[in-house]
Amino acid sequence: MIDAMVAAGISPEQILVVVRSELAREHVTAAEAERARIEANREGNRLRQAAFRARRNARNGERNGSNADNASNGVTPPKRSPAPPKTTPPGDSPSDPKGSSAPKGADRHRGTRIPVDFGLRPEARQACLDAGLAGRDVEEALAEFQDFWVGVPGARGMKLDWLATLRNRLRESTRRQVRPRDAPTRRGTGNGFLDALLDDHGGSHDPGSSQHRAEHGNVHRLAAGGRNAGR
Image (tube, rainbow, N blue to C red; front, side):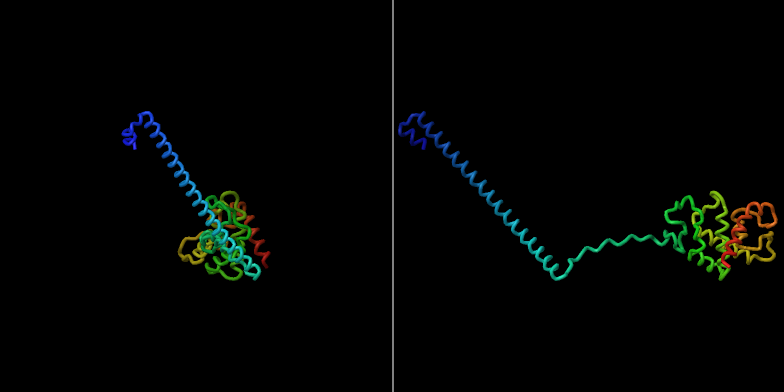
């Protein structure tokens, strides 16, 4: 186009004006095309969003309609099952015959006083039966054990595991009863179970000694009271 204008004798100034006008027209055309493209993209987005909302509303409507039908028919929608309750391992159960007899919540590193109902617990009675006791011997052994440790003051009267302590005393009492005749013996109270308790506490076995009367007189009265109360 420029060559034709030069051949026609048009001045350079006129040619420049024509070129600038042509460039401006092309710029306007390109801008309009860009605006049309952007508007087309926006319209596509609007259509996609409208279709998505329509599908979502349709699903919600179906779900609500199903719930309404179930309610009208007396059908309750299924619920999620609750989480299973936590269980305590057998060895940590406070009343487990094979585990600890310490009260629940006690500090197992410092020990506790003997529980007030220890002699009534099934695991304590079972320990006596396992040691060969029966009938009234079980009641007397548990009463003496309870009364003895109730009367022991301070830290000496605290144990980590009272059921294990009872088993130890029962075993010691059994060993005393089956001790050979030629083994050296010392004078005791006549009650193997109480003698085992006194050994553990470091007391005297001689009922006539002043140490025994001063240190364990209250224990014998408590034990006697426990036996008389059960008759």
